[in-house]
Image (cartoon, rainbow, N blue to C red; front, side):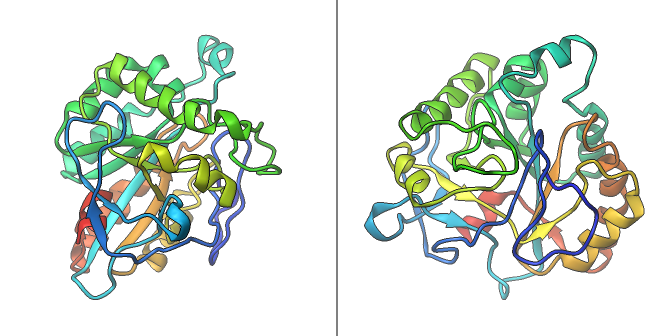
Length: 276
């Protein structure tokens, strides 16, 4: 998770619970193809062609010269061991944020952990069945896929594929009918081994080019300013859908959406950027 509200370039600082870190992407601008959907999906949205050696492809942003489009993405983070915290009253969801997106009619992509879907099945199902949103995979456990990823516990190489597939199973059980074949690495941390491990799953890894800095932030104006300064045509913005760890995000959305629309930007889902 991004910890400080500040301008960043290709890398970002992450926290231990909600993390997202820009790692140098591979094959960010390959021509899209329609690949087999990830497990339990009922359609085949656009994905990138595999990278060299058949590695999982990585998408960072869309075309810069095909119109002023931008994708807002929200990580619905919850790690496998945070159940006691939820039981004690900590909120890993953010219904107000989702209500704001619906009121503003903003399409968005939600990268959800399987553990989050288990904790909030009604919300997961609602998001998955609302055409305004698409649900994508953020792993089951929110454990890191590389060593030394901002303090996150790690998943072993031989369990990476199973962890991702377990998340799709959790989505299906929650009633999400068509989870997208897109995957966001916990912490944004990946390496060649991780890309190779996920090749059989058929997903496109999705990074970003705009860090909102919403995680743990208390200054909504500073977060909004960082988003507005960073967005370019085709941008993917990373934000979070967790009240306890990203309390300003709803206010940020209510600020940046009207301003970006006034600048001529149109909001789309990640699938639209990949397919354009």
